Amino acid sequence: MYQGTSVRPPYARLEDWVAAMPQELRHLKQAEAEALFRRIGITFAVYGEGGDPDRLIPFDMFPRVFAAREWAKLEKGIKQRARALNAFLVDIYGRGEIIRAGRVPSRLIYQNEAYEKAVAGIVPAKGVYAHIVGVDIVRTGPEEFFVLEDNCRTPSGVSYMLESREIMMRMFPGLFRENRIEPVDGYSEKLRRTLESVAPKQCPGDPTVVILTPGHFNSAYYEHSLLADLMGVELVEGQDLFVEGAHVWMRTTEGPRRVDVIYRRLDDAYIDPLCFRRDSMLGIPGLMDVYRAGGVSICSAPGAGVADDKAVYCHVPEMIRFYLGEEPILQNVPTWQCGKADDLRYVLDQLPDLVVKEVHGSGGYGMLVGPKASREEVERFRAKIVEDPGNYIAQPTLALSSVPTFVEEGVAPRHVDLRPYCLVGETIELVPGGLTRVALTEGSLVVNSSQGGGVKDTWVLAE
Image (spheres, rainbow, N blue to C red):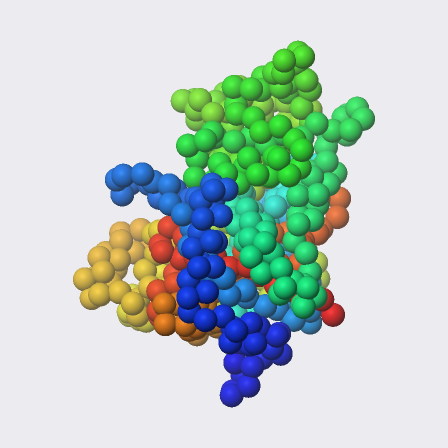
């Protein structure tokens, strides 16, 4: 919020708002926000810790604010990255030109557990594998943004973006009258338009879109049901769909209805027991046969997860140069791949000063934040890396930007990241905003809700 001794321009109008909110009113508003989250049912699940896994996600009322100029740069860089990642996915399941050119090691792709041989040779509708790309971004200075990781399979959290805005507008309508804030409520319309745009060529008339969920025990089930309601499409489980002939059908009270586009919110391994995990009770037997024949579109496409790999992430700047002939607008965080001998030696030598992550890890699990870890934790992690070096990457501990956050004593800086949601179909779109996750513990760099982080409303100011 502050730059030197003055308030940064994007936050200028919030200074009076904070000053006019005494502690008692702030506590009342915080309680109101928590009550709204609970009433709506916005929870997340933490498994393996005993008791009720569903928890209320912490919500901070102090919005994160971007100027229009700042957002314009981010938007351009995110779209560039989404184009390159999709070109990469089409390529590695096709001719593999980037591998033939020596730009990406073949072992990172063809020996990757997320690489699905079952889709080799398939080019999805409009050449899109990853239809919803969540790009996790951190800021380290006034003009410095870095990409932490890419999420090309089923990035979650968009419900927090939408509901955080809804609650802020309900609690502080005056703020939205006084500030020209770009809306995010068009996300569901853009998402539906994106999904419909990648319907199979043989689709007759308006495509039928469904959201495939693992069920109400899934940690993101609230989000699945919210998006289905907002888009006006059916929320289905595997048992609601079946394959007959060259198509996928949905069971309805009026008889079978053909399904053209499936927005799936479960992993590749579970979508078709005849192709992937035989013990899956969540998928649709024969789905992949229909997909290969072009009878249905699956969003995101099976196999997109290889682009989420944190070792593959290191090569995204090269993908941008190779496929688009452009220089990256958003930079990667410098990364060491422990599968490389020289990188491994450096990482083991500097381990207490680095952040180390599993290449397939997510949710803040399977990682070490060296400067915040005890000597025993560092040594335990060292043993894991030595046992399986290729399973880990390491990055420097960045001086992450912090934003104003309401704490018990008033307002204090806390570290944040940002996940915008880029929609890729016939066109590439994203709403001006995203999910801001905040590390509520003082000094913490881990923003994941499963690790004690919370969420904020994200504002993009109109020009």
